[in-house]
Length: 356
Image (cartoon, rainbow, N blue to C red):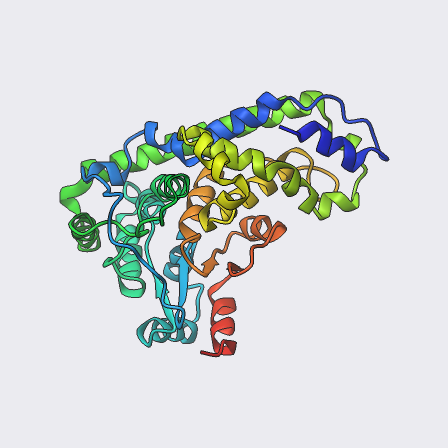
């Protein structure tokens, strides 16, 4: 991986950066790519004991409508009364009249369960709110499946299947969600197990990111790079240096790197889910090791779930999150046709201005 060469070229006139170990990014990729999710814990998806059919129906978005994906914190904000009644009514109307189409992701469902032990009523309210706004009719496949199917389809020269759970499985998930919205007492064991496993995953990922960052800083001090260096802010150079390596790493994790390389890694990067993930991963790695201005930000608990949301959101035109750090991360390396909004009012402003 050309990490050292890229950094040295960028900052040669400000400092000597020392040795940036390639094993760091290999370890980061192995812990960050969605494939790692398969072998870690029992998630809601796994509790339903249904297999995803990779040959499910094809799907095309209706371009006369705006497809939106909400971070879990959107439901939190609404539940806490932080959205005005007028804006909530406008949001409902936009879904009802077809200007917006929304879908629930598996990361949403897992995180919505987070308060089941401490505040079951809040979980019931938020799941009911999700049912009211985006519905349970079409739930997105788990992020690792979305990524894997897209990469395997590219390697084989075929179109990726539908992003939604296949018929039959979607009914099982909807049934469970409706039971939760109605109180879900009979699901106590399952839901508490999910909450525990999500917590373990978030902590494990935080430990991995923190250790990887420490390894980098043992060889490369972020303070050795001039504060507010222009290439701290504009990291397009970093993306160009790393994107092919990241794409290859994703393909290699699935054993299809030869096929993807033969077809062209540049083509793999044109696949929306891959492009969104690679851009966000490149920005994240840069920001926790070098930093936007004077120093890097520290990894935080839940960063790995941000990536699961990012992958799920790649199926939409718009991603709404109240996490300002996540908004900033995604805007570091923006993607044409994929918009990020920091609030529901910002989304509403956009759809009022949108012409159909």
